[in-house]
Length: 340
Ligand SMILES: NC(=O)c1ccc[n+]([C@@H]2O[C@H](COP(=O)([O-])OP(=O)(O)OC[C@H]3O[C@@H](n4cnc5c(N)ncnc54)[C@H](OP(=O)(O)O)[C@@H]3O)[C@@H](O)[C@H]2O)c1
Image (cartoon, rainbow, N blue to C red; front, side, top):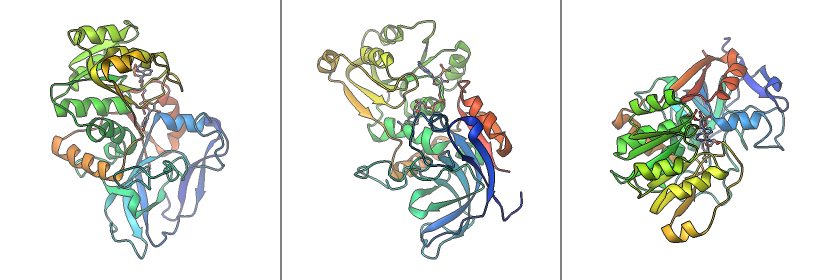
């Protein structure tokens, strides 16, 4: 790659065939910007939804998709104080949420949706929208953290606090779910993992799953979860699917149970009966990735707990359409694209 060219994958319309490789100039950092030479990018389920026009139907073109990236700071604006050149950083996806309560209008400044995405050789990040990458992780591993890991972490360690010995049910074996499983194991939670594949459930056991349920073989997985918990139900469920699946989640929850609404793999809607909320004092929390302080705390924990992200497959920068296609196959863990 020539050092003065910035390659980017740009959407010129909706649909994977309209994701095109283009060359442009390397951007100039503003006073508070970091110019980051990107090393690795990781894909999330929502990136495919954006490319397909499902998530942001009024997107303007051309548009560079994806939100997760790690890279080296190669230049800084004159007023930057938080970072210096040579440091390895991760972009913080909700750029205007440093800590505490969310900004009044969430997602006005979100990488890869309201802000341009990361699928380029070079990226400008505001210094307030970056964190140091955990030193123990490779570039490919570190690139997987900004959305999938932080979402799982926020649901389990920020929106609530983990209580060792309690049960958590994690749906599927995608990016968010495998981070949730690794955190659960590290926190001393008893994790029940559901999957459509017995093979993936065996892998989940090697990552610390306490019990597993094949939701294809046992569609009434809520009953299986109750049986596994001696009839008590599960303390916390990470809802990844929506639709009727959420009704089963409600059925599987214990008294004072918590339902973290994270994914929409099956439906854009939820429909619930009311009585179980009253009978079991269920808490429902919508999760929207997380703030920067949580990202920093999580990275510290990843170092201390020696957690290694699970990568399904790594693609080269010229293989981006194949990487997006692979996302459709139900990966076990994360898909990464390297720029080298
Ligand atoms: N709220 C937030 O802030 C936030 C952040 C990140 C992601 N998300 C959402 O969370 C969901 C997961 O994202 P991801 O990036 O982890 O996706 P992913 O890596 O593409 O995960 C896909 C996996 O989900 C599982 N799955 C699909 N249908 C399922 C079902 N009916 N029941 C249980 N599992 C099912 C499958 O696991 P098996 O192959 O094992 O069956 C599949 O491999 C998406 O809807 C995404 O948009 C939300």
